[in-house]
Image (cartoon, rainbow, N blue to C red; front, side, top):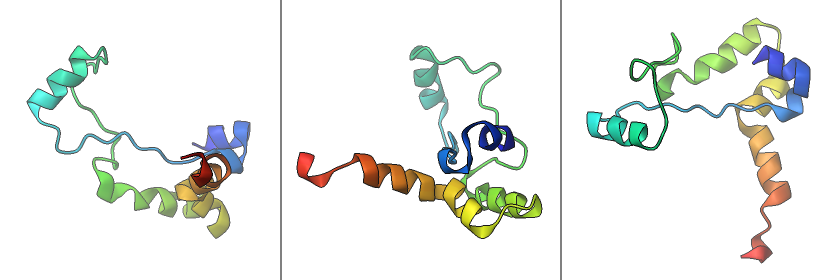
Length: 92
């Protein structure tokens, strides 16, 4: 994530976790038939086994010296900004 921040800037990075907590074997097989190969089945990053671990990202960012505003941007404000700029209610 730090590399992405260095390359794109703090205003262009956000957390978009692809967590599959609770997927059944049937769901896993459907995922595979869609062309998505998961070598060895479902794997997660250590410390990010489920949605309840997401707040750890903010804590780790703080430990690394990121400020509150920077953390908020990565944790969701960047997405909200882009949504507000691109999704216009009058289009629907």
